[in-house]
Image (tube, rainbow, N blue to C red; front, top):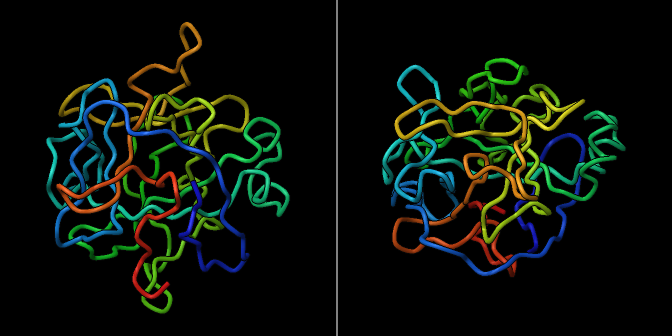
Length: 236
């Protein structure tokens, strides 16, 4: 899958190419019509397609039934782990473990309105709550711009090597210098946290496996797409 979305940060890093497989199992709901073709939503395998990451009124993050603007995010690939580590932007220990896996920022954009906030963490400690975190000015030239130099807590490594169908774990960069700390769903309607990656029989726990879809409800496709055909953000 080719990553066509590219950030406009001070350090220019090209997107990476990785492979994908066909969508497996029922798909999660997708972004709202107002957010449009370039928005993504995320569902945990353990809870099924009807519970997705959503933002609360206080900026916290929880699992919630699908198809509403509080679940609208724009996924921005920043570069590979190796590229960012070589540039001195993230710990080199991550490059030794994750190499060519892709680093993302998930910008919150309810109904398509960029907010300057991204999916982040309240603390880099395992067990901490996931929350919205400031990730800098929301636009440059009317385009979302990753601010990963300022807030490493908003950076997530999509670990494709551990995928199952279109589900994969997302490792938080700020919390994982010594051990993998990943996005974790606790229960339907409950908070989203970060916690140590749990592996049994060679598979990551289903509560830590996430499906990402891009596009409006009823027309969504796996994100990033196998052939790199995901819609580009307007202006790219």
